Length: 171
Figure (cartoon, helix red, strand yellow):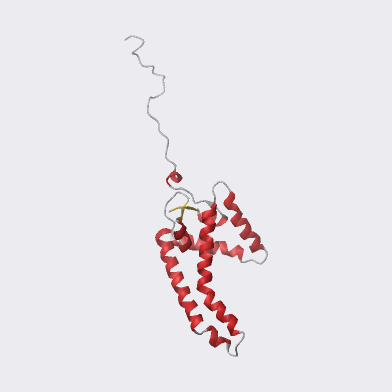
């Protein structure tokens, strides 16, 4: 054998090496502004559902029988609308990780690796666990501020996202 065709036994193995695909590469995170827009839409929807009850409570102060006014037509409308809103929200969150506001702006909640987030994870970890410190007088307001300021980090995750191991992505 001549020197040009002879393989070096000490040479590294020859193989094609490719990069491993990042799990987050398949999803595009939602921007901060669009997330704010979804939150504003959700707040407007809840306000619209509760408006008849709020208005009837204001009128109830002016009349002799406030309970009759609140439990009248406007109170009934708010109760029925609230039950409907809760049902629609549960279905949307379970199917797509979306509230009505998120669906309208085209974003959804998923796990950090891009997989589907369960209804339980979204309800318990993103909402209930996050609401506990928020319910503490004085400290709760500071916690809410810090929670939402975390969105300005590199990963665009609020504290409630970090607790639930979720991200918000374009749907």
